[in-house]
Length: 198
Image (cartoon, one colour):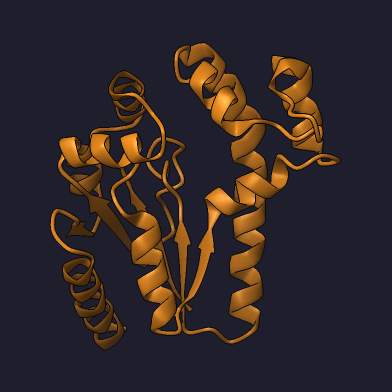
């Protein structure tokens, strides 16, 4: 099975690229979705996060308000590191199990979307690493559309490795600075090239 890691900066279009891979029938695992499930009530990670950060981050249904928690931890690198220590090992365990399952199922290509691939040192063992990048101002605009202020957006962008560094570490880079159709075309061209080289 050809193993592809998909990474890139926040609000650069990783989810769009993942969706385009899916349109071509490629199996895709979104680690953000794994993280969301791990934070649901009853999960061990949910209990640990509440114990560490407090019940003030729970909504009326006992669910963690990820927006409020995010605003807090991104203001404090130590708090962000504590949250990552709870979440990342569990997320990695889940995506590795997913990859083994897809391999057993006979999938020929599988994509794992890992936003912090390089930051957490999970960049070894892949057949190829694809990085999606955008101009910083476009990242800020997209994060603004998600309800973040300009200051909050810049804090989150700076909490990750710079796009330039991620791009240099990756095998391939997709530039998302135009239309969705342009990004889709780039994605399909790259996928065809990868499938031909397998």
